[in-house]
Image (cartoon, rainbow, N blue to C red; front, top):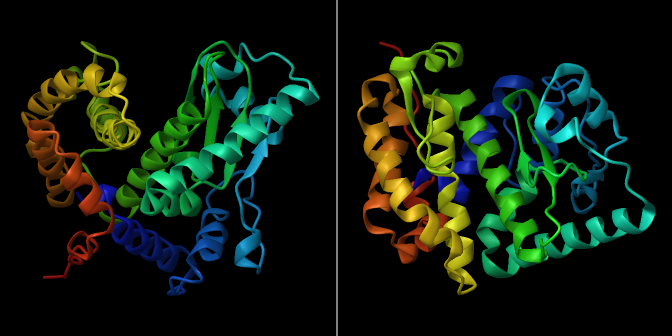
Length: 293
């Protein structure tokens, strides 16, 4: 699957950087150059350093600039509106869990870790009572997280990986385009499809596709640690969602249809050995560039 492949993520990100900064970055430069590039698109900058080892994601809280921005613009209102103040002990616990979660991802899948490390620049952690996370195309690099009271390190890891995959799909969409219609038109009733996560609900096509795609790394992480909760929850709903998404195939671009077909193939077989292989398989790294007629 291209959207799960580290090389494809690097290639797409490099293409985006080149388009925005008119510079072709090397693999070693990409982490910093990605941050420079998204700073031309974001309302608030991503920190970066010339020292590639000093570019870890910044961890912020409910009183941060990003929280203020989201509140003012109604972004993730279901998370931010109910946020309560956090004390230093709580923040220390959140920081420790996020750090441990990144280490957990690295242990389970070094390839997925490198994707998260590249794409996630800012993590906003808060207590809102709405357990879960969020990311948005207008805020590339930013992950919002409201940990549930029962969350342990694996749940933090799953949230970070889930949101990083959303960011990955946003970048891919910027580079190649996933749909033939703009997002606002995909909200029409005729372009809605079943969600794999909000089971039984019809969502705009782009959101339904994202929701289906991001179940793959979640299920894979749980498989790797011998847990089946999300695998049991999503297997049938993912198949139902893919069947419905496939009926809208004409609204996908050629690139988007390729991702859809690969996702449907996974849903049919739930083959985690294949997932593991595709994360680093160079066969999934490239995608032919568009050539002018």
